[in-house]
Length: 302
Image (cartoon, rainbow, N blue to C red; front, side, top):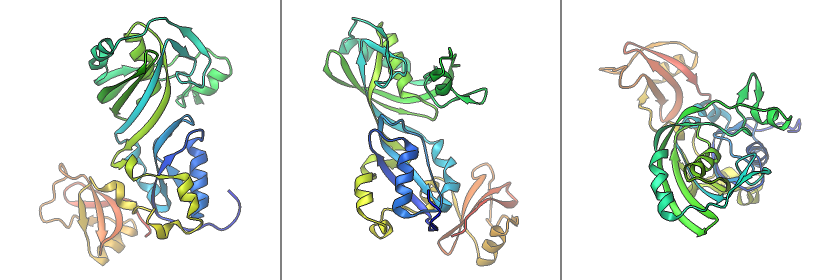
């Protein structure tokens, strides 16, 4: 970014990330379109992946954790018979197999990959090992040992095959899931090897692909994209959190970081330990309640 003065832009942009760009590169281009002072993205996509990449600007960056931990959906394709170092088509082939699973065989193993399962992330991933990214260690020639971890797969569907060498799938999963590892492990369960050739994210939390905008279209708006309704409100990702309306005086106190007596008639900390606080329809804060006291955890300057 240059030293040019940038604008205070607050809200969300749902980008359909193009092929061949990193998530950071895509964010940089969107920031330039808005001339935005501050921005971040939720859920990194590899350069070879496309699809839903939510971007937060300004005060919306304070709500990023509520989306990063959300469920995601992908559609992906695998190529049977070749395993690669990266588990996708970018890496060198490290193993081959003549075995090609049938539709019946594929359908028969899907249930093994639904629910809470153990998954070993790819060696070429951004996971840190002793403070250094796994992919950096792998590229330096180190023999990297990745530890398995628990992930949650809500649904895994087989979408069919274009030919004997390829198959397509749809998966709905929790945070921390690597689709490249899923493709690799599906192949191992079928007695063969494979790598992911296509990956498209179709949903992140409440954000879905049919509402996403392409980078080409966004850049076509020039430097006034906000008037095209592209920017979603900061509170967009907070819809699932109970809302609380407060007075102007209470809002001012919360913005100063002060705690208040919980203004609800019958507050229940078990039902709503975190609340989204509004004043006259404007987002004020995220606040934690113990049933008696309301304490601001995130204050918004809107």
